[in-house]
Length: 224
Image 1 (cartoon, rainbow, N blue to C red):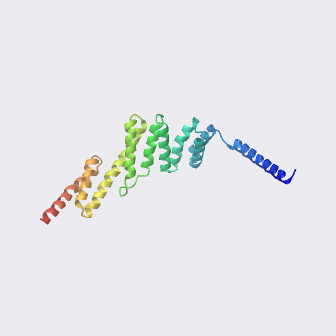
Image 2: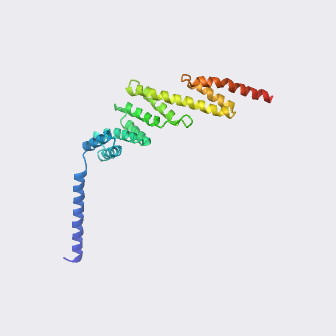
Image 3: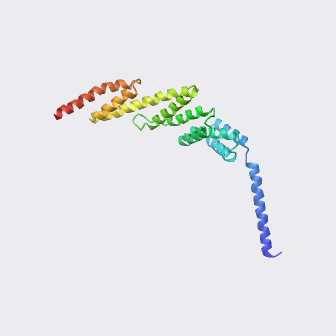
């Protein structure tokens, strides 16, 4: 056997060993769909959310047609939510809803999407996009699944959001009032009355509406 044949034979043997070794290792380490589901669920229960995410992602990737895959899609959203990774959680929940629109867990999924927005609620002096997104999501939940217990749970969060929005409108109105932009302030105070009449904030708005109107009238008469 010449040198080239010896080298070729050695390479073939080495590759065979490597391939067999990888196959043996994979067979030994790769878990079943059920094992991954149990592993992820247990990690979620133990609040080891990183491990839960890893297990559920493996389950989705390795066994996309397994009956446990649906569980992984749902619980992946939960794991991200508990990690406060709200955008990732929303993506996972929305994917679940799109893939399984008739699943009995969908009301819970929509509720959790709303919670992802609500948990990022800003103070009244900040942007209120999260409050509006929360309301929009929970309104859809109540409209689509009115008998769901999650629809009833959503109502208390909606009250908080509406209160935030009312306080925000009044806060902006006061800013305009203090800076002598009385027309802009008047519109904000009127919005409080028109959109949030039953939250208590309207009483404060009622005090400033005539004050704004007086200053607007005085400015008009003073210019004549």
